[in-house]
Length: 263
Image 1: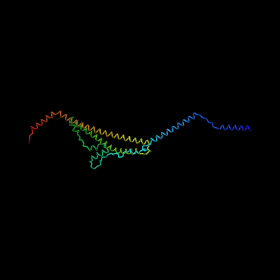
Image 2: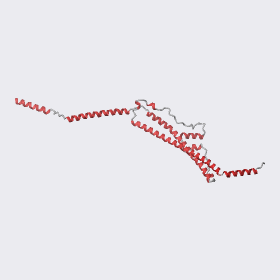
Image 3: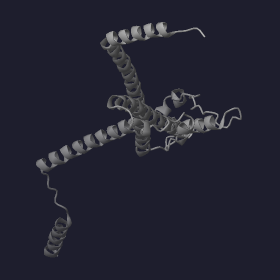
């Protein structure tokens, strides 16, 4: 019995030892796991701080103040010439309409100006010097007409497009001062693109108007130059032929006095 009892105790102890878990402790693994946990916690805190910073940066200015104060009410509207007034003549009415909407053919300007009589048959009978003078004056009139027609058309087109441009600016202004927080970064970039496009159009119109002014100044300068040249040429011819003219004048006057008779 003693042997049987001792065997049973030994067997029971062996079975308990076989079913138990062996605990293994490695200091290097423990340190590595601790460092990994500290690094992950630092990364989590950094990412959370970045997210909060991005949220603050993404907030629109409307969250802090009203955007309505940046809006300029009462923008001046484009003036329209009253071309339907019954007090205007038909030619004036057509030209006023051209100043409102443009006139690519120049028909309104041509109808409202005095035409130049065709003088090509007369030019052929003149001397070369007279032909040169007459053709230069006709060229000045042609240049003035072309400049005025182009300027009238440009002014009318800019006036007509200016009204539509004003509507676009007001619509863009309403979108810019919209206090809604639902607008994304893409919407803001679209607003910036629209503003840049409007600005480009305005610069183009300004360049065209400056070009029209330059053309008008060139025509005026040519006219002044031709007038000064004509005056100077007459003075030079007078000085050059003064002696002959005076002698002819004296001879003609003397002959008139000798042959004059009262009837």
